[in-house]
Image 1 (cartoon, protein in one colour):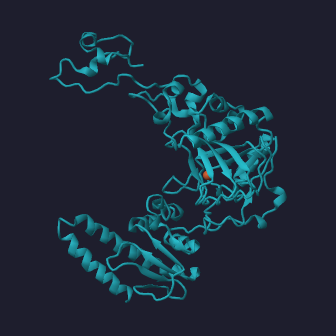
Image 2 (image 1 turned 180 degrees about the vertical axis):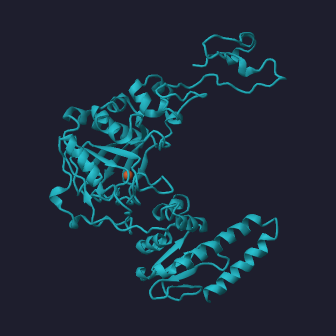
Image 3 (image 1 turned 45 degrees about the horizontal axis):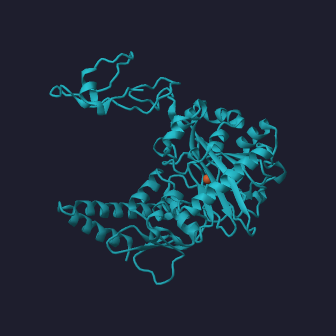
Length: 461
Ligand SMILES: [Fe+2]
């Protein structure tokens, strides 16, 4: 059937359902499906270079359509007898967002797979991604393969921090040699080994890395021992991060990743993939990966595309690490990379070898943190944080952000309120929320209710 006929059919159905109140949301969905199809039709002239057939399910009433991108002109088919190169089931809203530049296809095509595996693209992933890229206002280009770069110029571990800064600027990453002393490596490695084993034994381990999930991630390290809290005060953080992210940078997440043998390389991503609409003109985060073992290309070294932080760059196949290079270095090295760099956990092919790293991921102060420290932190940990760590976790105001009850002047530590101001009504003479309130000058204007209701005593911190 020709596209016009498909459009006509969907149009008729959509109009039918939108006339009834009962099926209002269903009608809206069908309208969106029709709009998504119109977008695909508009972009067909750009798709010939893909040279493949894609089955596309965007919730049209008659089922999927097939996008034939083998010849000019490319066509939308209602029937196709052969085996498509790829199949994509995607919400029509996402097609609209791709078209508006409001969502990166590598994010949108895979994000619902966490909840519904049938929504993951099938067949040749490259075809699915290129198709979606062609719907965007400005389709990206592939990262430059490392074979086309001057390998002598690529970052290597160095103690020259100015060189590291230049490497981060030019290549998107740098390697700091001897960032940790052998004793620091030993302490952190041992703490991590025991923590990982304990989480496994107690059934609270977080695992990934392919079908057998050999890798282990240890989240929320702020809760997992003094070694990890002390490590957040490492002088290299002050040396490197404020320059890149501003003085009031935050801990976005603080985790460890143990890559074990037999793992499958992670999907290529940038660390600001969660920022949608996607922004490529600026980096918002910086990651420091601390090597707790000698790390190389064979045992899980993080794969990076040098220079892929600059420009409208994205890999057409996010599951292929071809053309990338492993970040390598002896134990004690720190890999520092900015959040636009395309990278992935590398494959570990060394039998019985564990690749432990600690990841300190910092973000600019106005970005919502990956880990919600305020909800995740253990009370005794919160009570004993140093000011330095407290600030990094987000307990200090930043001029416009992070305040409590209106306090947003820069540089003030805020605390959890034991008795936040609640509702006052004229009819409530003895409002429980009045108990224990203190005025801003520190006096206690209301004392009667405190004695009336001892449950609600407590200051305003
Ligand atoms: Fe990452």
